[in-house]
Image 1: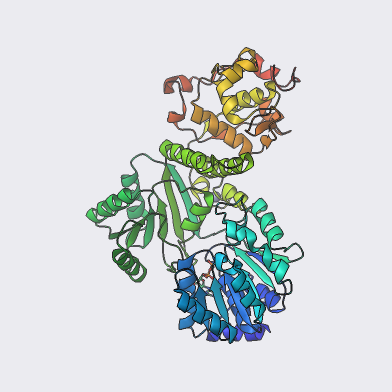
Image 2: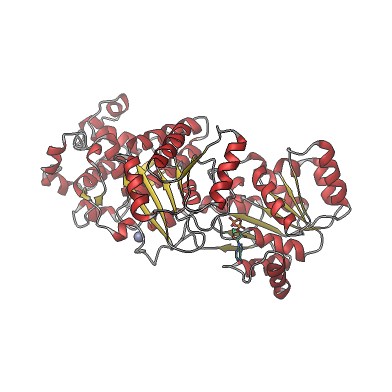
Length: 549
Ligand code: ADP
Ligand code: ZN
């Protein structure tokens, strides 16, 4: 079988060898078995179902959420002589009916469909009448409410195992944390099936993330010193910033083009084409650019603003260095990004149930930890994708390559941990920060927390500074987020056994805190975060009360 697959790989797709786990996955699916494939973008997921589609009897049905991607894949396949077609809302009813007729006549090896179409009674009836080679569910993370990209129609794909139990299902995605993965297995009934999980590490990418000072100058210095004359993408949040940055680069003799959804389609297409075919062109774009683009020699991806999630960051930076040669993922960020993202997260989820809001907040925290970490960048990145990080530090990121300025925030960490302890481990981060900052809110007074020893002992840090400390205590496993026993909606922070050594001063906590995170004048900080040492010792006693005063 695999030799047939190899022949197809060579003769149709023009590649000499399978990459990563492709051969195993293809063998598995050709044998009629279902599976989950977790592979980073650019890893080569498509071949994992395209080759089985050609080797198995009948038509393969590929479910894909994005019309543009679907059209692109079909166009490439047709050029390679594969009998592929798509069915989506972009087709006229007549054209769709014609495709359906030809499907019945067995004229296609692959049919790409949008999930809405698949779910119609009419289409399902059609599927009952033809031999089906397999179902490929692309972007399978869309089934999960926990994911970043939930599509209600995807949630209904559970009809596949129900109505077509004997047809192999291959679920593919480039991003799925543990909860999302569990949802995929449940929805598509893949519990008995194999999972093929590839590494998300991109060893040739060098990650660098710095605080924003003057981002244009920083960008110019970065390009000139490391990537002069090379192709790259610069991501910005706003359309205006895209255009201004492209103009600025051009005026500094770096050939740059702009791309965003507000531009006329013909101009956008022209810019994309120039970038793909040209050499040494910098594309300045919003996140609208890049889906499905195939250019292997992009040497850098720069972010002038924080993307909305680790998934987006990983996806966008992943466009650099597809050829395996050294490439850079470079980013600047500042407090404005954090405010923007927090308000977007809150407004985007305010009507959703509490656990989903908390999952969204935790995703944002994971992104901020990636920015603020003082350990290897690959640790928070791979942690996020649930990948073991035994082989780190990597030696190819700013944290590994440079000495980064860090601050010892052990005392602040002790204050935070003891505040968790003093309040009975029942409260969420924002409330604890209110106590540390000495805010007499109604809730604080209700619980009597304005009378505990940790009330108002945290004036040395701003609210954001405290958030950084709490985020890292969570990321470093000194705190865990448990159920909120005090009945509120937020997640209650609880101490882990490791917290003890921080409270005793045996473990030091070091973070990247810049002076804008301090609320007191900077001068005061250098004299130390003063707290009587007797109070620190007292932190290790038993709490007097459970759940507050
Ligand atoms: P994904 O869907 O995982 O993002 P694709 O299937 O689009 O990735 O593949 C990414 C790129 O890698 C494409 O240009 C594809 O043609 C190429 N590719 C896939 N498999 C191989 C292979 N075995 N050898 C060389 N190139 C490959
Ligand atoms: Zn590293």
